[in-house]
Image (cartoon, rainbow, N blue to C red; front, side, top):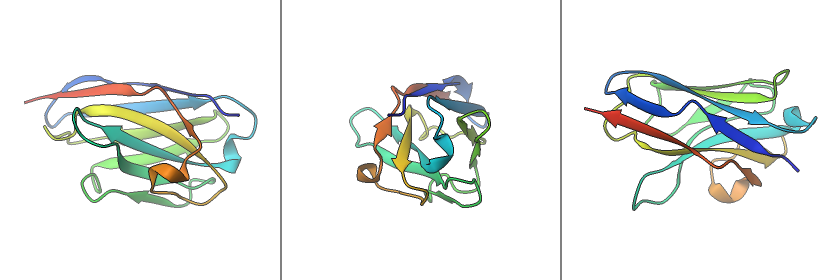
Amino acid sequence: QVQLVESGGGLVQAGGSLRLSCAASGRTFSSYAMGWFRQAPGKEREFVAAINWSGGSSYYATSVKGRFTISRDNAKNTVYLQMNSLKPEDPAVYYCAAKNGIRIGMSLNDYDYWGQGTQVTVSS
């Protein structure tokens, strides 16, 4: 069982930056691939970024590639999402997710545990 708690959301101007954090409970954090998803009002939850168990491999949605960076610190049981050059289309609730197994997943169904989400708002 893994419990995930996101933090770092908030209000930022367009073009600004935010760093989201996701703290995981448990002693086997390094055995999970991790992902970030987001859900805007009236829209389906969508994939944003994912990282494998070691941090050596990552994948991004086209809409955020080059602006967002996912990373993890297994010693701290934490995964991060650095978001730069935020755009008006980025606001959403951002969710952290953990996937059993070490390989990256990009589908909601790949993930076994979810956090409660953190709100990101971008002002124009």
